[in-house]
Structures are given as structure tokens and as C-alpha cells.
Length: 364
Image 1 (cartoon, one colour):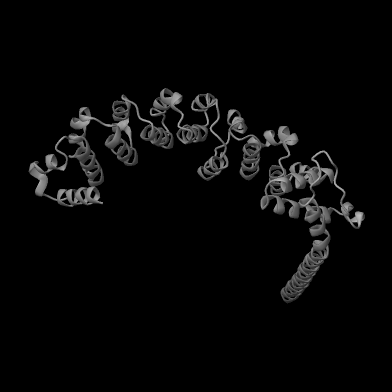
Image 2 (cartoon, one colour):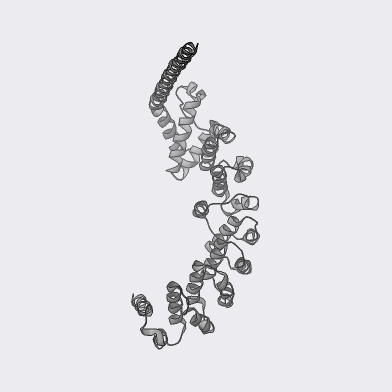
């Protein structure tokens, strides 16, 4: 009885083992078929792209060199018009039109935009914006932005607060592309953080003339979104915006380290008479980076009124702060570095190295 049970047990396990092998082999065959199918599909697409290269180049060249009045319609030979009903061909055409527009200027870019709209390629791009897949949304937004499709601004604006970081970043960039500074109105509604990298990208895209009205920056400096405040401080510095000074001073009391650093960067560039005392007030609560920036600002904005404060910093345990305070003192004190060398500790370390560094920087 016992032996029979063992025999049955081994038979069952052998059956399971063989079944597992068959399933694994089937899975491998299916994977191989899938990969082979993808390779064939991609080669087919690439073959079609090569075949369409000439007709697309012909269309674009005719458009680029079209010289009639702006109100005139294009008289272009599209060759096989059935191709325009092929989604893949239309996407290839969109990509080539966008590539050409990025590399051209003047009338040619206007003509390419007209072609894009005449063939309803803008509708193809907008379909992508409505896709549920984020990477397709991003591609559609990029296409509409490059082709200046301002008529889609409302749905694009709604995407500036999308949960996907790349989607909302692309939508925000599109608004800047359309309107410049006024396109920043999305800062009124955005609840998600704006990354430091994206803030830099947005600033780089604001390459037009200085706006006449920058009052909205004051509102953004009071935003509950800390990254909006950070970006607004960059904007205020970027545009030399003097009328937000008091709002920037208030930012010195913000709990966020980056906000206080941003406010100090603004004050370094656009100080006023009361700036030294305002920044000294927050000195005790700041971290090392804030303290070093305050000491650096005092080199240009400070006066002899801050000498006592600076003398106290010479006794700080941190050598970097000692050195920075000494540099600032040498700039503000009437005797310069000679005053520092009269102190009893002048021949001790790290002061020898600090004085040498100050002299070297002054000589440079």
C-alpha cells in the first residue's frame, strides 16, 4: 500500500515536470514569434518611410519656395493623394514639416504652418493630446507648440496641471512658446512642484522683450506652492523687477531654504539701503549656505555699520565662515586687510592661509 502511494506520487510529479517543460517551450516559441513579428513590422515601417521620403521632400520644397501672397492657397502637386489618407504617412509628413520649421526662418516657416493646417495635420497632433498614454500626449503637445497652434490653447492650458510631470511641463512650455511672459498664467493654478530643471527651461524660453506689466510676480510670491515662489524669485531677478522688493524681503522669513536662497540672490543683484540689516536678521537661523551667501552680499551692499557683526563671525567654529567674514571685512573696513593683521590671532592657523587667500584674490 505504502509503495503504491509512492509510485503514484512520483508519477504525478513527473507529469507536472513534463507539463512545466511544455509550457516553458510554448512561452519561448510565443516570445520568439512576437519578437520576429515586431522586427518584421519595424522593417516594414522603415521601408515605407524610405519610399515616402521623396514625395514628402517634394511637398516640403514646393511649400518652402512658394512666393505668392499670404492669402493665396498653395498650388502643390501632392502626387498620390491616397497617401494623405494613410495615418503613418501623415505622421511622417508631420515630423518632416516640424523638422524643417525648426531649421528655417521667415516666409518658409509661415508656409509650412499653412501646409500643416491645410492638410489638417494639426487635428492629427491634437488627437495625440487627447490620448490616454502620456508619451503620446507629450508628442502631440510638442507638435502643436512648434507649429504655433494657439487655437488649442484652452485644452493645453488644462494640461499645465496634469498629474504627469512631463505632460504638464510640455503644456507649460507650449504656453510660453505661444505668449511669452503672459503664458505664465498657469502659475495661478499649478499645484504640483516645478522642478529646478524645468524652471531653467522656462526662463530660457522667455527670450522676448521685458513685459510692460510684471505685477503678477507679486501674487506668485505669495503662492502656497513653494516651487512657484522659487520660480517667481528667479523671474524677478531675471527681469530686474524692482517693484517686488518688499515681497522679496518677506520671503526671507519663509521656512523653505530654497526660497530664502532665491530671495538672497535677488537682493544680491538689487540691494537697497536697508538690505544689509534685513539679511543680518535671518543670519542666525540660516544654514551654512545661507550664511555664506549673506556674507558675500555684504561685500557689495554692506557698510561700516556691519563691522561689529562681521568681527563676531571671525570667531565662528567653521573656517569657511571665518574666511568669508574676513574677506568681507577687508572690503568694508577703511584699513582693509591691514586691520585683520593687527589682531593677536593673525599668526595662527587658519588665519595665515585665509590672509594669503585674500591677498591672492585681490591681486588676481
